[in-house]
Image (cartoon, rainbow, N blue to C red; front, side, top):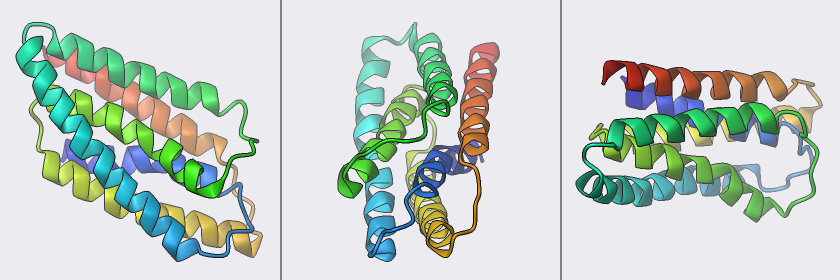
Length: 165
Protein backbone atom coordinates (compact mmCIF):
# COMPACT_ATOMS: atom_id res chain seq x y z
CA UNK A 1 0.00 0.00 0.00
CA UNK A 2 2.89 2.37 0.79
CA UNK A 3 4.17 1.92 -2.76
CA UNK A 4 0.83 2.87 -4.34
CA UNK A 5 0.43 5.96 -2.15
CA UNK A 6 4.03 6.95 -2.88
CA UNK A 7 3.34 6.61 -6.62
CA UNK A 8 0.54 9.13 -6.17
CA UNK A 9 2.68 11.42 -4.05
CA UNK A 10 5.56 11.61 -6.56
CA UNK A 11 3.03 12.38 -9.29
CA UNK A 12 1.53 15.35 -7.46
CA UNK A 13 4.42 17.59 -8.44
CA UNK A 14 3.74 16.83 -12.11
CA UNK A 15 0.18 18.03 -11.69
CA UNK A 16 1.43 21.13 -9.88
CA UNK A 17 3.87 21.91 -12.70
CA UNK A 18 1.52 21.13 -15.57
CA UNK A 19 -1.19 23.36 -14.13
CA UNK A 20 1.10 26.26 -15.04
CA UNK A 21 1.35 25.52 -18.78
CA UNK A 22 -1.96 26.08 -20.58
CA UNK A 23 -0.70 26.04 -24.20
CA UNK A 24 0.32 22.41 -24.71
CA UNK A 25 -0.91 21.03 -28.02
CA UNK A 26 -0.16 17.32 -27.40
CA UNK A 27 -1.51 16.82 -23.90
CA UNK A 28 -1.96 13.07 -24.37
CA UNK A 29 1.59 12.49 -25.66
CA UNK A 30 3.16 14.68 -22.98
CA UNK A 31 1.17 12.80 -20.35
CA UNK A 32 2.27 9.45 -21.80
CA UNK A 33 5.92 10.60 -21.96
CA UNK A 34 5.73 11.73 -18.35
CA UNK A 35 4.13 8.44 -17.29
CA UNK A 36 6.82 6.43 -19.08
CA UNK A 37 9.56 8.49 -17.42
CA UNK A 38 7.84 7.99 -14.07
CA UNK A 39 8.31 4.27 -14.68
CA UNK A 40 11.83 4.28 -16.19
CA UNK A 41 13.48 6.34 -13.46
CA UNK A 42 12.18 4.07 -10.67
CA UNK A 43 13.54 1.01 -12.46
CA UNK A 44 16.97 2.65 -12.45
CA UNK A 45 16.44 3.85 -8.88
CA UNK A 46 15.46 0.41 -7.61
CA UNK A 47 18.54 -1.06 -9.25
CA UNK A 48 20.76 1.55 -7.61
CA UNK A 49 18.87 1.13 -4.32
CA UNK A 50 19.39 -2.63 -4.31
CA UNK A 51 23.06 -2.14 -5.10
CA UNK A 52 23.36 0.40 -2.29
CA UNK A 53 21.54 -1.99 0.05
CA UNK A 54 24.28 -4.56 -0.39
CA UNK A 55 26.93 -1.88 -0.05
CA UNK A 56 25.47 -0.06 2.94
CA UNK A 57 23.32 -2.66 4.68
CA UNK A 58 23.68 -1.12 8.13
CA UNK A 59 22.92 2.44 7.03
CA UNK A 60 20.17 1.82 4.46
CA UNK A 61 17.21 2.91 6.59
CA UNK A 62 18.93 6.09 7.70
CA UNK A 63 20.12 6.94 4.17
CA UNK A 64 16.71 6.23 2.61
CA UNK A 65 14.93 8.25 5.29
CA UNK A 66 17.28 11.16 4.67
CA UNK A 67 16.73 10.95 0.91
CA UNK A 68 12.95 10.96 1.29
CA UNK A 69 13.14 13.80 3.82
CA UNK A 70 15.23 16.03 1.57
CA UNK A 71 13.14 15.26 -1.51
CA UNK A 72 10.04 16.25 0.46
CA UNK A 73 11.80 19.39 1.64
CA UNK A 74 12.77 20.19 -1.96
CA UNK A 75 9.09 19.95 -3.00
CA UNK A 76 8.15 22.47 -0.34
CA UNK A 77 11.00 24.85 -1.19
CA UNK A 78 10.29 24.63 -4.93
CA UNK A 79 6.72 25.78 -4.34
CA UNK A 80 8.12 29.26 -3.67
CA UNK A 81 9.19 29.79 -7.32
CA UNK A 82 6.56 28.23 -9.61
CA UNK A 83 7.38 30.30 -12.72
CA UNK A 84 10.08 29.06 -15.03
CA UNK A 85 10.86 28.74 -18.71
CA UNK A 86 11.87 25.24 -19.76
CA UNK A 87 11.16 23.13 -22.88
CA UNK A 88 8.18 20.80 -22.42
CA UNK A 89 10.12 17.55 -23.00
CA UNK A 90 12.78 18.59 -20.53
CA UNK A 91 10.06 19.57 -18.09
CA UNK A 92 8.72 16.00 -18.23
CA UNK A 93 12.21 14.65 -17.48
CA UNK A 94 12.89 17.02 -14.60
CA UNK A 95 9.46 16.43 -13.09
CA UNK A 96 10.11 12.68 -13.22
CA UNK A 97 13.58 12.68 -11.63
CA UNK A 98 12.15 12.61 -8.13
CA UNK A 99 10.83 9.10 -8.82
CA UNK A 100 14.46 8.01 -9.26
CA UNK A 101 15.44 9.28 -5.81
CA UNK A 102 12.36 7.89 -4.11
CA UNK A 103 12.86 4.51 -5.76
CA UNK A 104 16.47 4.39 -4.55
CA UNK A 105 15.07 4.67 -1.03
CA UNK A 106 12.43 2.03 -1.73
CA UNK A 107 15.07 -0.25 -3.24
CA UNK A 108 17.13 0.11 -0.11
CA UNK A 109 14.08 -0.77 1.98
CA UNK A 110 13.30 -3.80 -0.24
CA UNK A 111 9.77 -2.59 -0.98
CA UNK A 112 7.67 -3.89 -3.89
CA UNK A 113 9.11 -2.15 -6.92
CA UNK A 114 6.47 -3.23 -9.44
CA UNK A 115 3.63 -1.75 -7.40
CA UNK A 116 5.48 1.54 -7.10
CA UNK A 117 6.50 1.64 -10.78
CA UNK A 118 2.97 0.90 -12.00
CA UNK A 119 1.46 3.31 -9.51
CA UNK A 120 3.87 6.12 -10.39
CA UNK A 121 3.24 5.68 -14.12
CA UNK A 122 -0.54 5.46 -13.84
CA UNK A 123 -0.83 8.38 -11.43
CA UNK A 124 1.60 10.48 -13.47
CA UNK A 125 -0.49 9.96 -16.59
CA UNK A 126 -3.82 10.64 -14.89
CA UNK A 127 -2.64 13.68 -12.95
CA UNK A 128 -0.57 15.22 -15.76
CA UNK A 129 -3.33 14.83 -18.34
CA UNK A 130 -5.91 16.22 -15.91
CA UNK A 131 -3.65 19.15 -15.00
CA UNK A 132 -2.92 19.93 -18.65
CA UNK A 133 -6.62 19.75 -19.46
CA UNK A 134 -7.52 22.05 -16.56
CA UNK A 135 -4.76 24.50 -17.51
CA UNK A 136 -6.01 24.56 -21.12
CA UNK A 137 -9.61 25.12 -20.05
CA UNK A 138 -8.59 28.08 -17.90
CA UNK A 139 -9.64 26.61 -14.57
CA UNK A 140 -7.35 28.16 -12.00
CA UNK A 141 -5.92 25.76 -9.43
CA UNK A 142 -2.90 26.76 -7.39
CA UNK A 143 0.01 24.33 -7.68
CA UNK A 144 1.66 25.31 -4.39
CA UNK A 145 -0.67 23.24 -2.16
CA UNK A 146 0.03 20.13 -4.25
CA UNK A 147 3.77 20.58 -3.78
CA UNK A 148 3.29 21.10 -0.04
CA UNK A 149 1.14 17.95 0.20
CA UNK A 150 3.75 15.93 -1.73
CA UNK A 151 6.62 17.35 0.33
CA UNK A 152 4.97 16.81 3.70
CA UNK A 153 3.91 13.29 2.66
CA UNK A 154 7.48 12.32 1.72
CA UNK A 155 8.85 13.83 4.93
CA UNK A 156 6.23 11.86 6.88
CA UNK A 157 7.20 8.62 5.11
CA UNK A 158 10.88 9.34 5.85
CA UNK A 159 10.21 9.91 9.56
CA UNK A 160 8.00 6.80 9.72
CA UNK A 161 10.67 4.72 7.99
CA UNK A 162 13.33 5.96 10.39
CA UNK A 163 11.02 5.41 13.36
CA UNK A 164 10.31 1.79 12.30
CA UNK A 165 14.03 1.04 12.34
